Image (cartoon, rainbow, N blue to C red; front, top):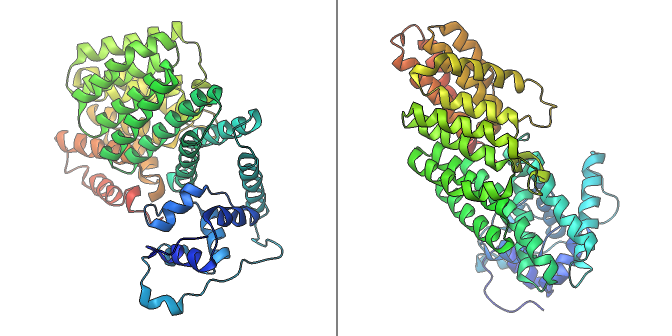
Length: 431
C-alpha cells in the first residue's frame, strides 16, 4: 500500500488516496493501453520529472480524471477535500484516429512483454532494440516535440532495466542502448539550445559506451561532443573532441571515421585555418576506403553518417573561408541537391537547412544577393518546431555574411526576415 507521507504532487496524493502500490498503478496503466515504468511514475509523482508523451498524458487523464498539468502540480493539503480520484474510463477507445489506437495497442503489448519476464529474454531484448532504433531513425526527419517524450521514456526504460537484475549477456547490450539513447538526448539538448545539458548527457553516454566496450559508440559520442561544441561557439573544444574520437573510430571502421575528421574540418574553418580544414576534409574522404558498417550504423538515422551529410559538413566548413568560395559553392550545390527528396533515407531537415544556408553564404561572397535570398528562403519558411539550434545559428551566419558584404543596405529586407526568423527558435515553441 502507498505509504502515508506528505505527497509532493496532486498525482502522488491521488495514488495515496487509492491505497494502491505503484506497481498496481502501472498494471492498471498498461490495462488502459499505456506504457510506463514504475520508476518513471514515481519520478512524476515526486515532481522530479514533468516530461511525458501524449500517450502518457491521455492515459493518466483517463485514470485520474484530471489534466496532466493539474496532476503534476504541487499538492496543497488544504485542497485535499476538493481532490477526488475518478475511476478509470471503460468501454471502447474512441479517439477518432485508428493509427493512434493501434499505437496504443502496440505500446500495451510491448509493456506486457517486458513486464512479464523476470529477466530480459531474446524477444524482449529485441523489443528494446526496436524502440531505440525507431527513435534514432525518426530523429533527423521529425520535429523534436513529436519524439522527445518517447526518447525520454525509452532512456528511462533502458536505465530501469540496467538498475534491475539482468542476465550477464544482456548487460553489454543494455549499456550499448543506454549510450545510444544518451547520445540522442545530448543532440536533443543541443537542438533546444542547452549545451550544458547536452554535454552532461554525452558524458553519461560515453560511460555507457565504456561499459559496453564499444569503439564505434565511443567515437560517435565524441562526434556529438564535437558537434555541440562547434555550435556553442567553442571550435577549439570541437577540434579536441573530434581528435579524441579518432582512435576509437579507426578501430571501429564505422562511418564515425568519416564524421570525426569532417567535424574537425569545420571547426578548423571556424578558427580561420584553411590548411587544417583541407587536410581534415581529405582524411574524411579517404576514410571511406576503410568503412565497414557496425551495429551502431545499423541503427540508422542519427546513428550513422552518410555521404549526404559529408557534403553538407564540407560546404558548411568551406563557407567560413574567403579563399574557398568556388569549392564551397560546389559542395553546397551538391548538398542542396542531395537533400531535395524528403523520402530519401538520409534526408534530414536540419542538414537540408544547413546546406541552404551554406549556399546562401557562398552566393553573398560572389555578390549574388538575389541568389542568396532564393537559397535561404526554404530555411526562413521552416515552422517554429523545426527551428533547432543549429538551423537558427546557420541563419545567423547568413545574416553576418550580409553585414560583412559591404552591401548590407541592399539586403536590408532579407536581414529583417532573418531577424524575425531567429526571434522564434524551437525552444520558444509551446510543447
